[in-house]
Amino acid sequence: MSRHPRPFLKWAGNKHRLLDRILPRLPAGDRLIEPFAGAAAVTLAADYPAYRLVDSNPDLIDLFRAVRDEGEPFIQRARALFSDGNDAATYYARRTAFNAETDPVERAALFLYLNRHGYNGLCRYNRSGGFNVPFGRHARPYFPEAELTAFARRARECPVELAVGDFEAELDAARPGDVVYCDPPYAPLSATADFTAYAPGAFADDAQARLAAAARRAARRGVPVVISNHDTPVVREHYHGADLDSFPVARTISRQGSNRRPVDEVLALFA
Image (cartoon, rainbow, N blue to C red; front, top):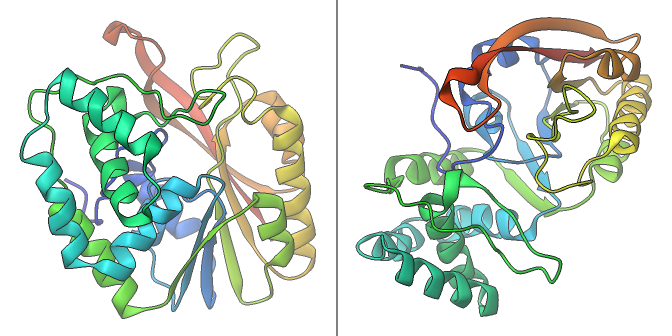
């Protein structure tokens, strides 16, 4: 069992099980910035005086904000949604309610419910911006009370800034004393392997190249940047000149459990 705090979200690419690889690669600094917040596993486990979580998904950032600012009342509000509703009819009714909701705190509670009751912890939207992940049919969805409390506690103990934003702008705004950890949607292992993408074209190769270029600019200003990704020839080309650490990670790459096999990942340090 990991000694690190667990995130309260189920999230594609959650880095909790790789923390023993990632944390030693992070340089010392005054503030850790995650431009791809995801489940915030690194922020929860790292040891910095301050943190900044940024993501392009406003629903994700609003959920973190609700946990940080509302604390225990929000946790109890979310708990009520887990006391019933583990059936398809209730799930789809609450998904419809989420898509129509404008109150940020209620929307955040529904987002957490959908995350834990939806299929495979996915976060996906249609072209109109509606959340469209199907019901997950879990036997007993877990209510992450301890994990929510741990995030709220971290936000009380030290500053945790939250913002909706673009990764490139965030890297360009970083200043000496900051350390940046990037966990972007991974580059595909091959031209036909797109299982890591949140949506088709969501983070194409030009975005991977822009991320590497922004990391180099930040490093030249004295801001170290660590990036996780698949270890492929294309990724290595993007990360040329960085200090690379490659290692195998078990991952399911299809619905068939028999196809679970190691794939190589890389941690690139630009400094």
